[in-house]
Structure formats: C-alpha cells, structure tokens
Image (cartoon, rainbow, N blue to C red; front, side, top):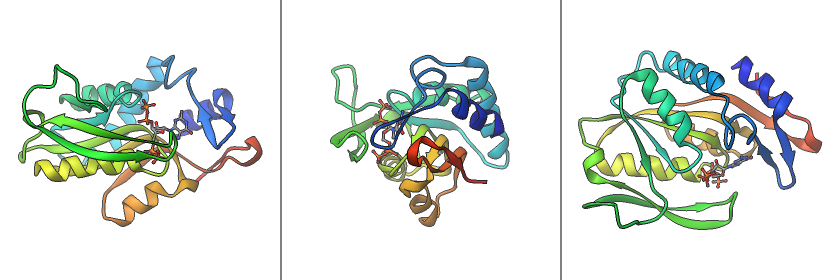
Length: 190
Ligand code: G4P
C-alpha cells in the first residue's frame, strides 16, 4: 500500500536491533484516517473470502483489528497475554516465544468467542519472526474454525516469519513488506 510505505519512510524511525518505531502514526498515536484506509485495503484484498470474525492479540494489534472488523461488519476478538480474573470459562491457549522481546507468554481466548462455524481473519500490526501469528493460527485450529488468512500492516520480510507461514499454506497479506532496514535505509518489496 503506497500510502503506508510513504508514511513509514516519512515518520518511521529505525532503532537499534532492527526495530522500526511507528509509534507516531500506528502504535501509540494513531492516524485514524490512515487506519480506516488500511482497513478498507484489507477488505479489498479479502473481498473473495468469507469472514465472520477478526482475531488479534493485545495490545498493538487491537486498533487495526477493530478497523478491519468494522470494514467487514463483524466482531473483533483479541487474545489476552495473561490470565486475568475476568476471563470466564474455558479458554483456547497457545504458548508463544517472542524473539523480538525475548520472552515467553501464553495467549488465551475464551472458547465461547470462537466456534467451528466461524471463518477467522487474523490481523496484526507487525509480522517479524511470526511467533504471535503462529500462536493465533494454533488457537484458530484448536477451535475448529476456518482460517480465511492473515493480514498485517508491516511485515519485516527479512526476518522470514511471513514466508514461513505462507509456505505452510496460510494466506498472508501484508500492506507493506520491508526487505531490508540496513543502516537505517528502508527497502520495500515491490
Ligand atoms: P517475533 O516472533 O520476532 O517476536 O515477532 P512477532 O512477529 O511475533 O512479533 C512480536 C512482537 O514484536 C509484536 O508485538 C510485534 O508487534 C512486535 N514487533 C516486531 N518487530 C517490531 C518492530 O520492528 N517494530 C515494532 N514497533 N514492533 C515490532 P507484541 O509482542 O505482540 O507486543 P505488543 O506491542 O502488541 O503489545
């Protein structure tokens, strides 16, 4: 998506350790116009798919998940990263090792939010090594729902997570794919 690539070039900040900060327009402060246009683009890309729910994981995936769910007119569900007292009943869960943050966590979704009749579109802000996406895919499989695919705002293609997941047969659409961020120079996949 040209507009997103241009915005990343203008306002993205490359930090040490191969991390791209987009806190000024995608993560912490959100450009709501851009958010809606990205959601419409995801809707266009998955126009041929049946989608009954959009699934993401807290925290920064929630904004784009709500926008995409609104575009499809379906509910948005997010996995929590910790068991809290307000989670009621049985849960689907998956343990995830985040390479980016070098920590392990367990993501959970109450069973009553996903059913075998659902067609799930997974949405997230970043796709790096793909641990978060793999965790969400595993939860969808466990629930017996169909997986329509996954849509992410920014894929760090050079970390390989997206291509690995595509090779497993899952449809992954990314609005911007970075092939390199070396020496602060951003190169997008054409
Ligand atoms: P991983 O396997 O390498 O850990 O990557 P994964 O694709 O699962 O993404 C893990 C987390 O790292 C995600 O956040 C993702 O948003 C974030 N992330 C990865 N690379 C970057 C980057 O270059 N810039 C930014 N801003 N975030 C990145 P999370 O652990 O789910 O946490 P949260 O931020 O959503 O709370």
